[in-house]
Length: 336
Image (tube, rainbow, N blue to C red):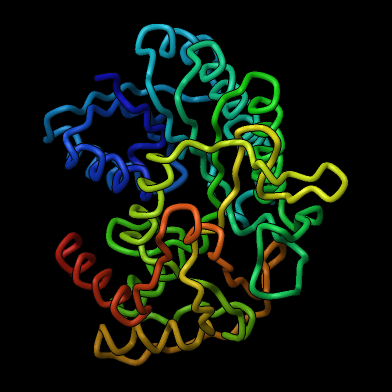
């Protein structure tokens, strides 16, 4: 059985997805560059969990390295590719745009070319709710235009979707993009709000609350993300028989290409998210209210009807439950 290539395997979503594939008895080749955008020790701890399981192999490669990626595809000939490697973070994209150009654009181009040369059965890649940018109509639907990104990170994710469609159209590669909505949970990213808030509150420090706590996010628990990703991976994209070139649907195509939202469909006020964390920690946060940051969206909410119709699943883990699980993991991992 050919391996599934999982890029970004030492990342938050990548580790969980690779772990779930291994639990099903599949072979996984994980790729990651273990960069220092956030704590490398956490990435290595995630990687160790994967390396302890049979069927897993790892190669430290930067997806932006075209020579290394070409050699990898030729040697491994993966049956499927789950591309999760990317330079993450909206705010960091303001300070270090070159990192996003390299990883998210050049790196994704290398993935597409590898999938083309090996004619993989299915490419699933991570997009982001950030592509909705300046859209104000909620919930966000795949039918909405996404032509107004408000961060460079979002622009690179929009570019990924367009690049992927071109390859699906030209070379017939079944390709599916998933727009993730604010993923959280155990083994999460230290640059995300839940991680920062938990660390500060346990240290007795004030937390920075942007947008005066009035921002709204469709917080989506990691286990729901994994379930959705695997179901999509198992069902390769197909051409939309009802595609109308005079009124095209942005989420489908005459090519084997699909785009899906994957979010909890329960938009939550940031202050309510903090309340759930306060409950899980048994303490009240000292809050430092700050204005919204450049590049941040005010509100997100996912319409997941298309995902449900395609694979029969929509995320639904309540925020209070998910936050409590994260706190349990955090206390066990860091032993504060």
